[in-house]
Length: 285
Image 1 (tube, one colour):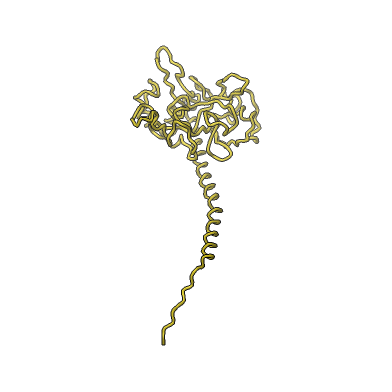
Image 2: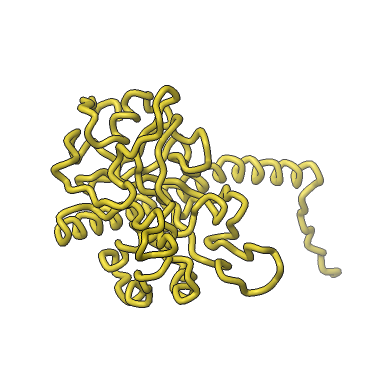
């Protein structure tokens, strides 16, 4: 007897196309969920960064009886021929477990002095939002990159950036710029001068994607800003993030909240200023 040959069943072209179509549909359905889960994780990490910053600010206040100044030596003084522009984010380093880095910085000279160059190149994870993707000219990844574009290692190249800015205050078109926030020039604000309420006043907020052309270095004392527009309207020294629908902000009481893009103008103005006598309905935040 001749052995029978086993028949091997195969897929037809139509069946193969149907399987491919089903797999494609499943991927299309799952991809947004995966992306949403990843953004949710990044958002939590960003919130934790700001929480660490806010706790550090509280410890700084406990030691110095005031929050750090947003920027010291904004203008040259007779005894200081060049503006030092020491940043709040530099003064905060010992309070966010960066004491070793802080000890490398010479505060008696400007932040941009070559003696501080090596320290300024450190990329500090706590100062970076993991969702940041839209970066401005003057930033490469998490650093300032090759500022002159000459392929050489010049002062200012590859300095670490920061995605959070100190709140200088709020400005509306019919007013002159005012230092009505908590992070101002030259002077640390004590908590008792935040008369609008610590829980209703922003001290630091997301201001992500800035490079050296927009004062985006963590060592640069100009990384403070006053708010002019709605949230996520302008990516240049305004509240801005790459989170969908809003941005995080740290308040003077140590809390961190997610502010929606739709936060109305009067509420935003109230929480960006420290002593205007505004009353905020927290249900609108």
